Length: 188
Image (tube, rainbow, N blue to C red; front, side, top):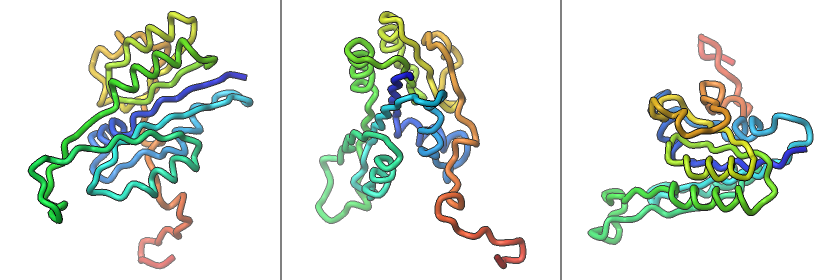
């Protein structure tokens, strides 16, 4: 039995999934979670770092992630200080990301916990420090990402393995909503 920690950068996955497969493409987080389990008996703790926008309702998505087994951390996007009350649709959102906190927490988890294996699910190449910390305590890690989001020299990060997310990790709503798929003539 292995104890596995998966750290998932939801914002980075969202953006890189859209870049690679188009503006309507979405990550299938249920499939992603199942991919962390490689042997019967594996125990997985998955942490999803989510940036929440004031322009979108994210409660359903966060509930979905929790039902799939993820623990979620939220970071609220900033709002332009020139925002006028009642004009949210015209508001400029100030983007934020989790990378700094994720790297610090991952380094602490590598040293101070009893996890055997780590998955870093992100398109950022800023995880070299945590990967070194994981290796310093004789543990292993895998980086999972969409191919287009990693720089050409991604192997310099030193991870033990790289898994590139492809179309099998894309969300297909027909699988989850049990909606009949229409035939060519529009009839079910």
